[in-house]
Image 1 (tube, rainbow, N blue to C red):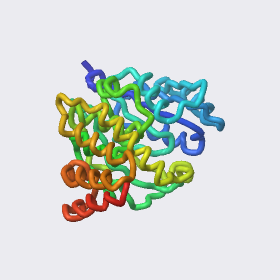
Image 2 (tube, one colour):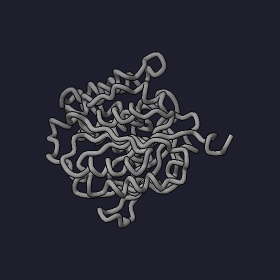
Image 3 (cartoon, rainbow, N blue to C red):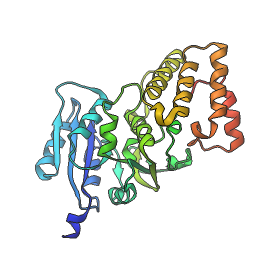
Image 4 (cartoon, rainbow, N blue to C red):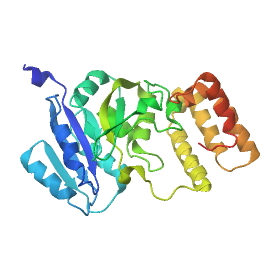
Length: 304
């Protein structure tokens, strides 16, 4: 058996929407990966109105591994990623945005790390719209690490999809993707229920910062933040199996209840849960023990 045949095959799931400006650079960085067993790059376009579809078409004609699909209606990025992953055929799937630049060894290093894990991720470097380094990394702001506790993902969306690789079993267990939280947060949460989320302590993506991905439109009001946090926590609690994770399920249910309204009692409840599960909930926060302890008390006034 040749070395290439013995390698684990990897699919790339890439979603696009009006991404003409940076898409070519993203595609080129995928095509230039030094891992030879990437045998499909599945690209799903969510009804772009610019030249994104033409770019995908041109690349697919030049590179047979690129398979392109176009939605008949806009379904949003969460459902678009669910669709893109569903269209892949291999056991291991690397997730891709449309505007970043991958390190040439990204796939090779993630596939080496994933083994039997449902999910692995890496650090990323921030660059400006012209791909100039901003001298910042995700690890500068977060305590990036491996994880196998679902409470680690209850509040903070730490794992960006563009840094991640998942296996198919995780995807099958995670669908349909809920729309109450980011899909990468959902996948990390589900992964922590079935195994360890692995971490590669190296920046493998240049994460581009530009107007379209740094501005989120109208800011949430306080009431909207409370309502959305309540919905997210309810969703996570509902999908935490009591048979194996009763302690975590009760914690998530209590947290969700604390966001039902802004009453004094619910504020007290939230602080109590944060104090009891401080280590788990704040696992990825880059703070010392004292700061995390103080942060828990601040949750009487804060909402996230």
